[in-house]
Image 1 (tube, rainbow, N blue to C red):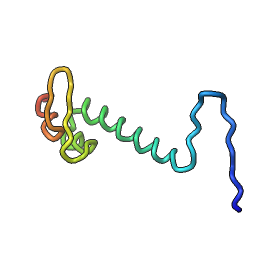
Image 2: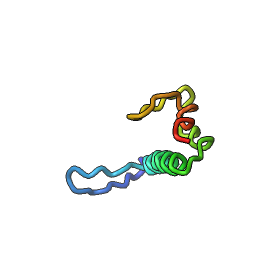
Image 3: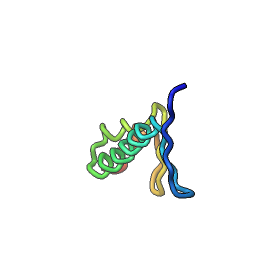
Length: 73
């Protein structure tokens, strides 16, 4: 049987298991890209943070993600 590595963490602290670090990094990259592309007006790149057919809702506009940037120009 293969040995297992255990991590001790304080109660209530989530310790990512192997593979979860990559997932968390990928999620963080999408969030960072959303902010950078949106705030920079990079609307072509902005659409890359959405799945096909996704919608974006904000307090001032609701539209398909592919069209959302048009209202921000």
